[in-house]
Image (cartoon, rainbow, N blue to C red; front, top):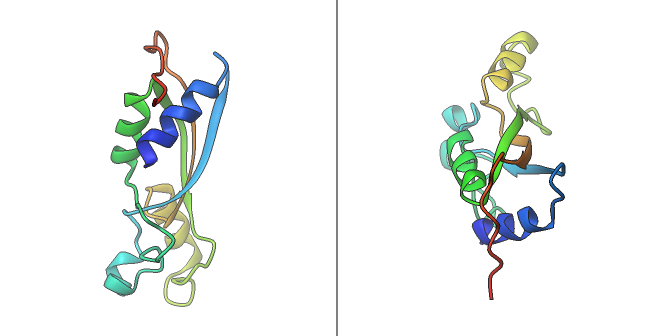
Length: 115
């Protein structure tokens, strides 16, 4: 339940607190050559996220996306793409590994805790 977990995390943050997440991305360049074999389609990855989907989830719990970066721990495309092309794709948000920071949005509504 990613939304429920984000809600709990938001409730634990102080007003100046920052939430840092590393999550699997759905906008990865690796989807093009690997398709259904894309490495983030793994059994332990129950959810994949796009920049828009995670930003909406964060906003729904009173958090605002403050930093967003994609990368690739495995660099499966390193053998077929030049380094500058890989870096450019990650800068565009096309890396499979998303690292983000979120902060409490100004005038955020109080976070509800599940019963």
